[in-house]
Length: 105
Image 1 (tube, rainbow, N blue to C red):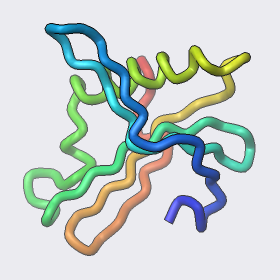
Image 2 (cartoon, rainbow, N blue to C red; image 1 turned 90 degrees about the vertical axis):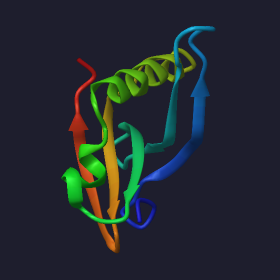
Image 3 (spheres, rainbow, N blue to C red; image 1 turned 60 degrees about the horizontal axis):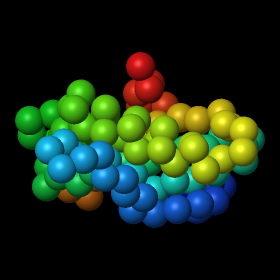
Image 4 (tube, helix red, strand yellow; image 1 turned 30 degrees about the horizontal axis):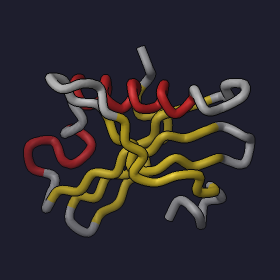
């Protein structure tokens, strides 16, 4: 879906460990958009949209872990490119791509 929309895969399942007592983070997909923006993608699936659906399941703690992993990934880049966090949500048979779903704040 994302490749058909013009995004180019950079990495998948990028993981970083934080420490023995705290969870690190994982980014499902890292993609590059046509304008050079680095896109960190969280993919979520739920059987249906009850309880807010797949996108609503990305709570504050999950967002913090995604941002942590993205910051770690960006350490490998010579100059940090523009970035955004997208969500691809599957609710049953329905797919929704939420561009810029949340900020790194």
